[in-house]
Every structure is written in C-alpha cells, then in structure tokens.
Image (cartoon, rainbow, N blue to C red):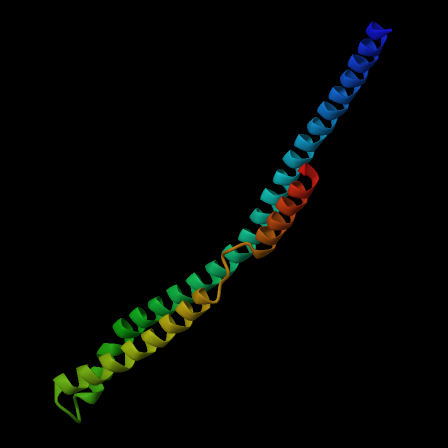
Length: 140
C-alpha cells in the first residue's frame, strides 16, 4: 500500500507539472504577442508625431527660404529706391532689418510648432504599464 500511494502522488505531480508547463508556455506566448502589439502601437503613434514634426520643419524651411529670397531679390531694388531720399548705408540698413524681422517671425512660428509636438507615445506607455501590472498579478 505504501508503494501505491507513492505511485499516485507521482502521477499527480506529473499532471501538475504538465499543467504548470502548459500554463507557463501559454503565458510566454501571450507575452510575446503582447510585446508585438505594443511595438506596433508605438510605431503608429510615432508616425503621427513624425508627420507633425515634418510640417513644423517645412514651415521653418519655408520661412528661411522666403527670408533669403526676399533679401536677395527685393533688397537691391528697395535700397536703390531709398537711396534717392537718404544715404545709401541707411537705406541698406533699413531694408536689411525689415527682412531679418520677417525671417525671424517665420522661424519663431516653426519652432513653436515643433515645441508643441509630443514625441513620447503616451498610449503605448500607459498600456505597457497596464500590461506589466496584469502580468505581475497573474504571476503572483
């Protein structure tokens, strides 16, 4: 009889071990799937933020190009026109300051658009926290 109870216990232990290994294998599979889904979510969020960053960069570039083109194309003609009523150096200084201010305004708008971007994937960070809490609960 003593031998029979030992055989029964070892069969029960084998079932528990198999059950535990099945549960653990399922948990690892679920964790792998969860990580893949989190990475996909992070990519999607980052792509949205990247699109906003591109818009800010384009506005900044347009501001710089407009300031440069304006300085080159219009600068000379305005300076020559103003030189008829004031000294040449004063005409050049006045026109230069006006176009530099316009360029600075465009650059400021572009920089402010860039500052408003949220490059941290907030939803992904929150779901990762939630997932970690769930995993801790299941492991305990």
